[in-house]
Amino acid sequence: MNYRNILVTKEKNIAIVRLNRPQALNALSSDLMTELADALEACDKDHDIHVMILTGGANVFAAGADLREMSDAKTINSTLESKSELWERIRKISKPIIAAVSGYCLGGGNELAMSCDMILASESASFGQPEVNVGLMPGAGGTQRLPRVVGKQIAMEMVLTGRRITAEEAFRIGLVNHVIPTENLMGEAKKLAHEIASKPTQSVQAAKKAILRAQDTTLEDGLQYEHKAFSTLIGTEDAREGMQAFLEKRKPVFKGR
Image (cartoon, rainbow, N blue to C red):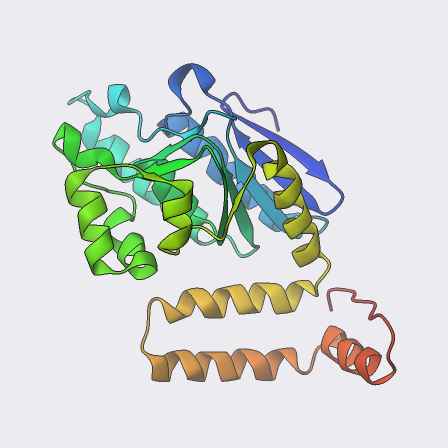
């Protein structure tokens, strides 16, 4: 498909989805979010794609919501309802998504990065939820995902002050997985993506779903879900191949079955 606000490329069994509204600092307009949800769902259905990388530009990942669009009182209710559905579509993607963040990652941009499964940050990246500075609050998961990642106290400080934090601070509080020199960011993101893509797809997707489940349920329910998922996987061809290859001291050949 041809997109106006994003770019999609494929390299072997990974897809790279790049936000591409540089004139608006990759502000998350309804059009961009629609294209993003469409592209991620298309990659999710593509059997040749195992992992996705979501990135922006060198100077900005995404500077937040499109305030010009949101300030239109005539359309604000329909815009918010539509965007809520788009965020839910992104949340339901079954394949792993790695956010490769450089430059500003603020407001909705930070919420989008947190919607991904891992975050790699360049040394120039900065993160924040500055909505309070314009009389708003996070509205796409910032008050819910952020405390789960960094804890209540740090989330409170970030959201209530609206201040930005550096990539190093984001790493220290557990918001990002790694901090990488800017020029190496995409190379390291691809390296991680290819490593994950080499694993059996059913195992990867089942494990992702179980980890996300842990954020939404009790430990007891989560353990029960994990046990059921494990029991399902142990009967797959890939599991049998993986265990046999381990016993025979050879490299497994996974087929996604």
